[in-house]
Every structure is written in C-alpha cells, then in structure tokens.
Length: 91
Image 1 (cartoon, rainbow, N blue to C red):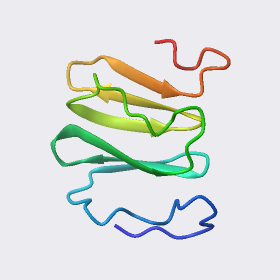
Image 2: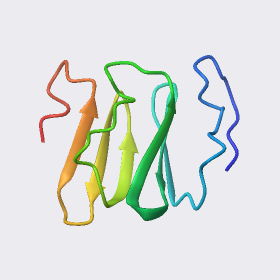
Image 3: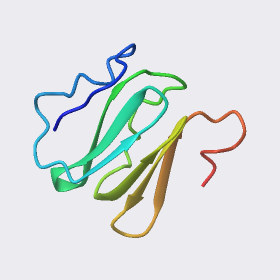
Image 4: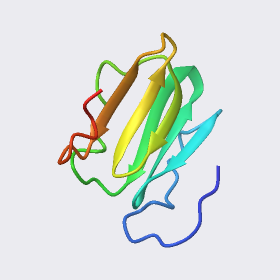
C-alpha cells in the first residue's frame, strides 16, 4: 500500500505491518483500512478519540471515514466511533 499528499499528521506514513488490505477510507487527516481477517487499522490524526477502535469491532466487511468512522460487520450491524458532537455515532 502506498499513500501520498500532505503529511501534517502522519497520514501518509502507512504502517509496515499492513498486508492484504481490502478497502481504504480516508478521513479528515487520517486513514482507515480494512485488513485481512476483518480487522480495522488506522493512522494519522487523532481527534475525538478516532484512533480508539471499539473493542466490539470484529469481523468488519466495510469501513467509512469522515470526522467519525463507521464499520459494517459481517452480521449486518454497524459500529461507529469518533466525533460525537452532533450525534453522528448514534447508531
């Protein structure tokens, strides 16, 4: 995986441990990827606790990032975390 662009918050510093990345989602100065086995990895800015992946997030099949993050799990449920100021993580 390769990243480019402005690197003010380390958002182009792709972690070397990442393999078999299936999906990439870029947010406001950070990145989220869906990696092998349904795990989510992230790097870049840490605003609103966005780098703290919820412990219940397992078996993810899709990710989306903005100022908050969403992940769709294999069972059809959604997990949200990050910016909560206007209810965007109320699933």
